[in-house]
Amino acid sequence: MTTVTPKDASGEFIGMARQLVSTLSCEPWGNPSPSVYETARLVTLAPWLNGQTERISHLLHSRRADGGWGGTVPKEFALVPTLSAAEALLTTLQRAQTQGLPRQLDHTRLTQITDRALRLLFAWLSSPDDLDLPDTHAIELVVPYLVTAINQHLDDLQGTPLAGIGAGHARLRLPGSLDPQLLDVLRSRLAAGESVPDKALYSLETSGAYAHQARGIQPVPPGTVGASPAATAAWLGKDKPEDPHNAAVRYLNAVATRYEGLAPAPIPIAQFERVAVLGFLARAGLRPAVSAELLSGIEIAIGPTGTAGGAGLPVDGDTTAIALVTLAELGIRHDPACLFTYERDDHFCTWPGERTPAPSTNSHQLEALGQYLARGHPNDTARYRRAVKKISAWICGQQREEGSWDDKWHASPYYPTVCCALALDRYGTGNAATTVHKAVDWVLATQRGEGSWGRWQGTIEETAYAMLTLLLTRHRIDKQVQSAVARGSLYLQQVLHNPDNAPLWTGKDLYFHQALAMAPAVAALHLAQSQPAAPQVGQLSAWQ
Image (cartoon, rainbow, N blue to C red; front, side, top):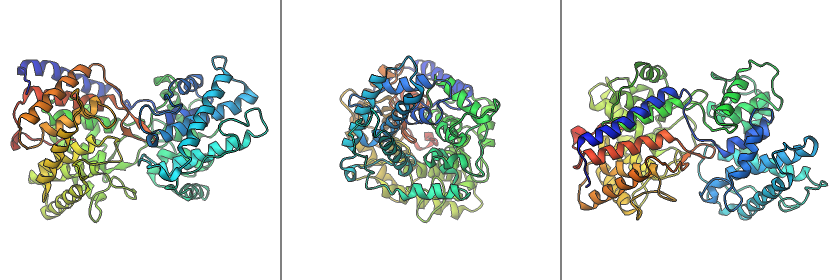
């Protein structure tokens, strides 16, 4: 394995860790990348918001080669952003019939781009039962909402010069795996004045006009509904409020200003970013000074049922577990008993009522509970031991045959794999050791020729996860592992200052967290260059 002197490693990577921590303090909302889905929703829902021309222009210039949106991902992941962008452009064309277009936009080009996007969607949905849709947030609501909206546009355009756009009289079909009645149920509940789960607020825009009519839903500071610009705009309604001090309007204007007209989601997400970044760094032994204000803010946010990833998001068991482990790693003990809120018969959940449990969430909860148990804190030791055993068995049972895990919070298997492997290695019971070794073998087998790792292409983030799996689990350190780490290190060094910005985190579409890509990369390089041998049990500390 390639090594450097401790001075070199500490000088470069401790400095980068300090910069990451400093950035956390300067980002009160977090810094997720702009979202095609969310930006397109603002085109439709908030045409009065500053930056409307920039939003439309962004949609026109950010297309894939095939005419859709969503980068280089397969069509299953590209479906939602393409539906959202196509609907926004159809809305723009309809408005142009009475309001005209901004002078910077060309009507003919806009029509051609919209037509091509629709034809692509018709091709993708021609055999809707063949689509293996990913478990992105509220996809069971988002896709029916957008398919219905696009079909309504096509109906409205009949008898106009745009009647032949897309495929003429054809209408989009809904993927067979989705039940349109779920959206009807949400809208009916809102229309009846009934409450909806907090997690539904993140996708409130799918309820259409009912979002504006919803009773009992109010923005939370800094003015957001569901930590989503789209949901907030839908809640405001189609007309801009006359009150210039309206908190939701200020929130939307702040987002649009910061992102030059575009919009990410979720935002704010500062709590999740902070605890995850600090956790990655601490796991590798990188502990730059963290302000008391930042740490106290993380701790104070943990209530009786835990903490949320950011204002407007529901309290969840994943962010809570990461926060607890990270605080403990930084010397702050906090009773993790709130995690039992998320206990189920054979696993722990992210939040009550979730459709699909997440291996990454369970791995973080295993670490938080196992760490607390290992340090001799619990009054009810038996309860903690049962929980650790339960989660360990469930995670082991979720491992894929080749050795990886899939997860709804991240498009790449390398993220849940590093989460699960490190948690099982440190605190797992039963078949944990065999499961970890299988994960390590999978990581070794999937390295790319240039030294990177990645689901669709090599990325800085996935390469870092793979290297942390190799560097922080108690397995053999042989020439194959040493060679893989050395090649991965060379790749990371080449791309560290020019990250690929590949969107892999799952919201309503995929998005990128620069801090959450850089932190594991810095951690992996620090470990690779300062720990040429396998870590011992005593060196292993909780991660995330």
